[in-house]
Image 1 (cartoon, one colour):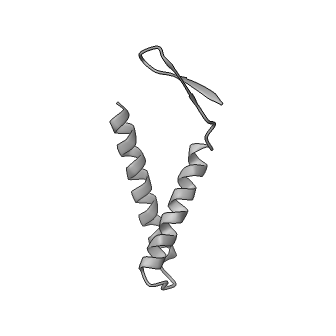
Image 2 (cartoon, rainbow, N blue to C red):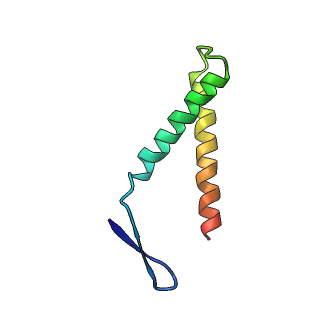
Length: 69
């Protein structure tokens, strides 16, 4: 269990999280598989699906960081 301090000097208790890189990799992997399924399970597009999933997930993380500021 970790405690995070906020600007208002209040503490919030949160559960430990997996390292962000592992979490992001898992999200990318799941989205790449969904793209493969949406593409009709056609082989030969794994790099394309992975790169698209990576782009989308990184964009989501960047948007979340901007909203925190």
